[in-house]
Figure 1 (spheres, rainbow, N blue to C red):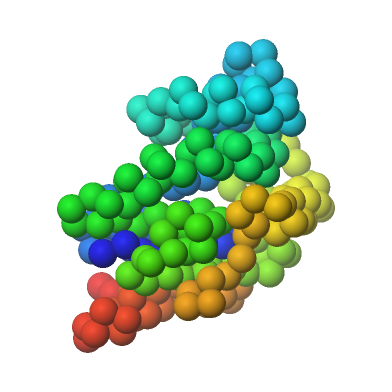
Figure 2: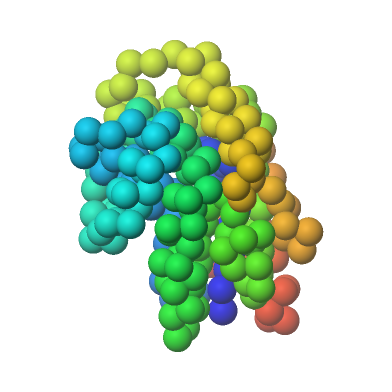
Amino acid sequence: MIIAVDGPAASGKGTLSKRVAVHYALAYLDTGSLYRAVARDTVIAGGDPRDEDAAVAAAEKIDPDTLEDPGLRARGVGEAASIVAAHAKVRTALLAYQRSFAKQPAGAVIDGRDIGTVICPDATVKLFVTATPEERAHRRYLQLIDGGVQVTEDEVLADIRRRDERDQGREAAPLLKADDAHLLDTTNLSIDAAFKAAIDVIDAALGRTGSAS
């Protein structure tokens, strides 16, 4: 069973995907961490995230064991990750790893921007998780403030809008809702409500009954 979860930055798809993975006892992969790691490693090597060749060199040497690095969640790394993710050759370099992860015996929950459209177009269930830019910016702002980062909500909203434009406008695997994906708008939902809605959709797709606990 492969569950593909796509959506824009700060839509709640990561938190939701982790809970879904636990619920169904499936492996979980946050593909955004792959691009964040590429951005981090590109900079560490002295390269520029805007330089496709430098980013590809980092992608080809990616170490999955470093994907839990807390430093990947830094605000600047997220912006750099959005830049390297726009490089077609970087996406190609990471394609095999993502597809291999999805093909584990029990299956997997994978979240990102192009899981249902490119990485796993034949996924068992596809979700597209979204929320208004203002709500997503508010959530990210609270996370940053809680982490001690001094920033204004307007700055975070501007950052969200830039990332949306880059993700949706890139030529290589742009952010799109797959035609057969279930839309889940979390603008007015708590994480618990969003989780229940997601489980209901997935169980219905699997022909199961019952709800999240």
